[in-house]
Image 1 (cartoon, helix red, strand yellow):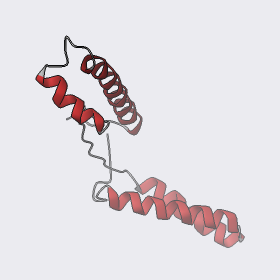
Image 2 (cartoon, one colour; image 1 turned 60 degrees about the vertical axis):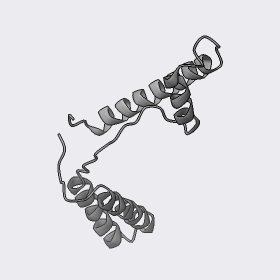
Image 3 (cartoon, one colour; image 1 turned 60 degrees about the horizontal axis):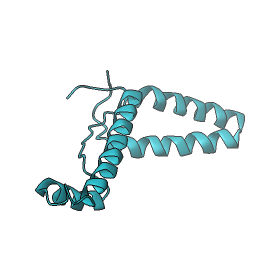
Length: 113
C-alpha cells in the first residue's frame, strides 16, 4: 500500500466510490436480464449492492497535526491578548476538532509523505 497525500486519498476514494456506483448500476441491469440473472456472481453481488457497496476499500490515515496545532494555539494566545472573542472561539473550536481527529487517527504518527 502506498502513502497518499490528503488530496490524492480523496481522489482515490472518490474514484472507488464512482466505480462502485457504476458497477452497481451495471449489476442491476444484469440482474434483471434473463441472460445473466442466473449467474452465481450476479446474485451474490446483488445482495452486497443492496447495502450500497460491492467494492471494499480500507484506509489508514496519519494526521500531520503539529503545524496546524501550533498555528491555532498561537492565534488563540494572540486573540486572548487582543480580546478577540470571535477568534478565540473559532481557534478553540478548531483545536477541539483537531484533537478529536488526532485521537481518531491514532495520534502517534506526526508526519506524512
